[in-house]
Image (cartoon, rainbow, N blue to C red; front, side, top):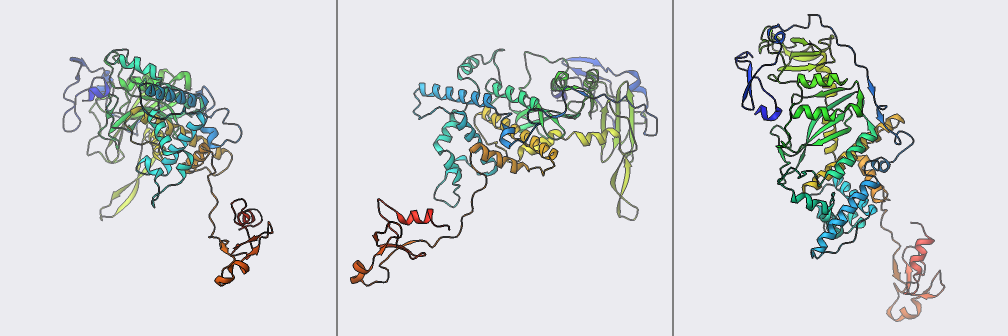
Length: 553
């Protein structure tokens, strides 16, 4: 039901060629007339040959200089330095305190489990192992501690025992356990907070994402799905997505994929009805003038685009551009000179309603755009394959509206962010949904850190690292170990052998001993490679001392 999706009236359409059988719609049991001005229902659509008055150019006035902010914009920083701007001492202290409190409450209930309070340094190693598992992906977490098998991975056991890792994961918590109890008692009432278990980390990391980096002029708003099949009311279903079941995030991203701001969708609220609809509220809250400044251009898809939203953004000093769905209040419905299925490829139709431009373009199928910052057509063309009369194909240029080209160029910020998040992700299937949220917050911090590191490398004229290279370096620094290890050389022939080798049995006691080159005592042992006598006793091991201090392999 489109009304459930957009929370606003939908104009009904029918007819074989896009005509309209009626101009009213049902909404919450009532009937409303279309709010379109007469000009949009009676005026004929114009073509690209008709003159258009270009809107005034936006004056870009950001609150801060776009890009990386202090202190990261000065000096050289390691991956751990950048990541620590997101997971700093305050965040680590919160996670340690909450986890220790949860473990203590379980022990008070009589849970028979050995527990030692986790410290920030140990938590760093725990996070480092999660990132290590994102690179070295195995089916189960316990597989990283398997022994005596060809699939053994020896490194994790040198960082943390398996049982300790499992105990930290078992008691891991974000919120205060005592406050969780009070919140659970309010379940079913208006005082119940659905996001109580994740809100502390949620707010802290959100603030740090906005503080460390300021977006450039072109930004995009889109939704993101985090996979989970946990039994909770927050879970959403999106039929057309690769991840159909999960937690839905609304994300504001820069064009380079940096996650600037986000919201977790909690479902329809019965106590707080939205006057303007969900899509309006999401964009107007993410695109915050007090934080951003003015002159930004916001790109969004047909779920968010509406004339009401775009006019609101224009009043706030923002530009807006996006695809729209026919039937939303305020979009043109005039059938005169409109595109049809038989319209040739590259056909353009447009109408202006004040500061808004509605443009339609025929490509493989009809594309509908709305913008308040672009003109209709500036001469841009795009190549498309067409079939000639002789049956062969060739590429021919066709005109393309300005808004379509700009939309394709800048709308992919959230999609780029999603691709980077899925690379070596720390996400694993969990029963507790708030750990799934924590894993996603960790992925956001690592991905944003990678984008900052990439930009710093570009500024210094260095070759930027790949996503995997960055995560490997960050993992090694969190674990406190070197990323590269010394290669193992060929097997040494310096082995201890008896000095009586080759002597007859009767002569082994007298002729089968040699003088140790270090302690000068008689010894029945020698080095097979060096052909020197070397002691191997309980109180002295001259063989080992000689080969570790005086000999280089």
